[in-house]
Image (tube, rainbow, N blue to C red; front, side):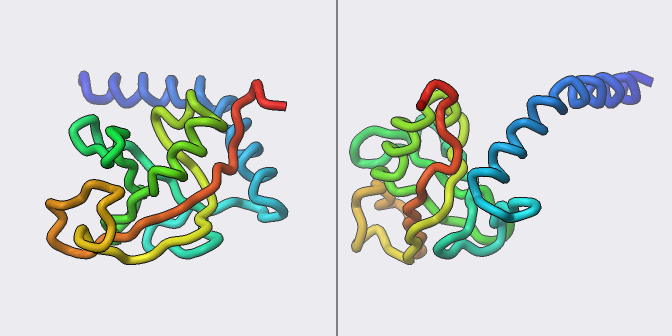
Length: 143
């Protein structure tokens, strides 16, 4: 009973968001060039790939006090956005960057807490990956 109505309501809300989603997909497609359908990397991350970074939460911060962002992934954990890239996202698209950063990877390398203290990951026992990315979407107000 109630579960069916909840699904129906969510389907209706999704339809209301469809035009906004369509506009976003078109903007991403234009930003990434001549690709028919842009694809966000989920299982591996390399130079030129598109990656979606999400905030880890306010308790996980870099050495500058900024929230850490980790790549949305499937069985490929520990890919963190470098603080200089995060600042670039916050400058070019501050409203969107509060929730996520969608960008093209320019560099991605494996590191350890001993080698790289910029991310403040001293508690990470296993190696992690440091990712640099450039925004593919820009704030609507930007010329």
